[in-house]
Amino acid sequence: MTKKIVLYCLAVMCCVLTVGCSGKKEDGQGSGKDLKIMFTVSDGSDTFRATLAEAAKNAAEEAGYTIDIQDAAGSSETQMNQIKNAKDADVIICALCDAGTAQQMEALAGDKPIVFINSCPEEEYLQKFSQEDLFNEFTRDEKGNVVLTEEEANKKIKKLGGYDRLYRIKLEADYLKELTMKGVVKRYGENPSPEIMERIIFELHIMKTMGFPGYFLIVQDFIRAARDMGVIVGPGRGSAAGSAVAYCLGITNIDPIKYDLLFERFLNPDRISLPDTDVDFDDAGRQQVLEWVTEKYGADKVSHIVTFGSMAAKMAIKDVARVLKLELSEANRLAKMVPEAPKMTLKKAYKENPDLEKEKQSLNPLISKTIQFAETLEGSIRQTGVHACGILISRDPLTDHIPIMPTEGESLMTTQYDGHFVEPIGLIKMDFLGLRTLSIIKTCLDNIKKSKHIVLNENEIPLDDEETFKLFTRGDTTGLFQFEPPGMKTVSYTHLRAHKTGRNLVCRLLLEKIDADFHEMWESLTTLLCLLYFLYEQRFALQRKYLTWFHILFDTS
Image (cartoon, rainbow, N blue to C red; front, side):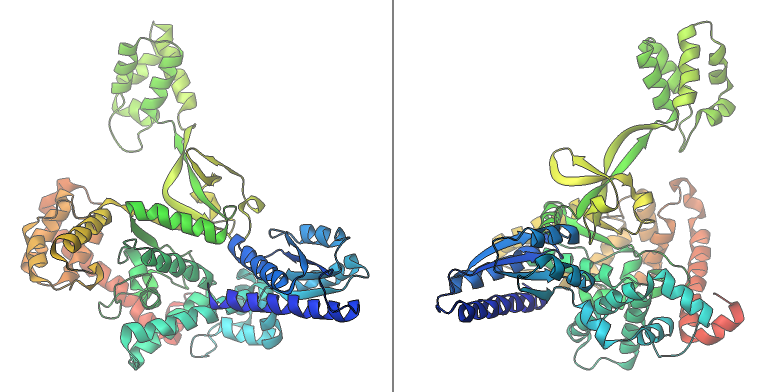
């Protein structure tokens, strides 16, 4: 249980006991056992509300009071109805987040005493920080310098959701900073260099002013839980590996400062986009983590993401032919006339294979109808599926924002909007990937422990291991995640033999989508791409170092 929840539980228990003691005095009998307390809680996750309710129940039972627990499940309207219908209660204890509804609840309680507990700490920030404080904090750089005009600053405040939203972001950012600083000590020692602290402060400021602290708190939370459960978690990949804050939080295990990785490729204030952190788990562990997330945040706030499978050219022909009862041999003949190529359409197929278009005038009416109906149905939705790794986690019940539907064979629900639409309405997708290679690593570690009585930590294996380097130079990377394709083996073989440094592995990132037919062009092409990548990185490095001059010269607003 977190420190925050413990404090809330103590507050609830103290409130119950205080109310009970008051009831004893008014009762005049000293027993207090006839005192009936109603405790209602609305905000927070299912686990949070249940924990507060349990604390209230235990305190009442210990003192011998009768208590009625009411869970409003995030609805202020439900909470008001509970208070209105609390006819048998002598005292009402109300845990709520929206202080604006307190006056209405007092009116509904009538003559009954009602006590409020603040279950939202951002209310404290309303008293502690003024709007001017937040304006300056969110519109200046990490050193307090003014970098935006007043018009640009006001636009930024509005884009972040206004001052009501800023108080929440500020609260999340302060907690994120606290966790990060603990991680700095763990990763870099008690006295980190000024360069490291400058990088950490810069990243925290960018995360805060882009409105994403809550995202990183959630990601570090389920990754920490996964490791506590013994799940193998990947070291981090993609642009998230460029974040020193992610490294200090344990989201990644790659030191971006040591390897000179750029944070701006992950989050860039000049190009507003949602964070994208791919988190790898072993296959069995992924399901464990999903169950943990669902239990913590509530089944109504977590879901899979739907995918829509559209009807491609070949499939459209086959489906129509089946419905029209065209002979299977004819259906296959027509389908084979569509060229094998990515994103092939019937319109493109007619150009590459004119014989297919001629079938529209076939003497066999079933053939001509098949082609005509296939043109109409091409591109329409054929079936739905579930995104392989995308998971939504929401603060509010998902039904407040999007329609959901049952998932076949699972209790976790699935959205009816696909990934292209969930982000524009304010929901953030988390990527939970299950990797067979991590499952193999876990099995190997278990077997080594059983047979050799040696406990190995996969994160402590040195990255400069000579035998591992030789394996890459030989191209013996079958079964190694993302290095299995022939093209990747060639890159490993040619570049790592010539340069004994892992930095040339950037060529893998640049070439992983290039067709393997261009082997003979790779040597010159990789040189060019590496040069372009270097210049791209230096642009961000210079921008960070000379921010003011960069804005003047290049006007990146």
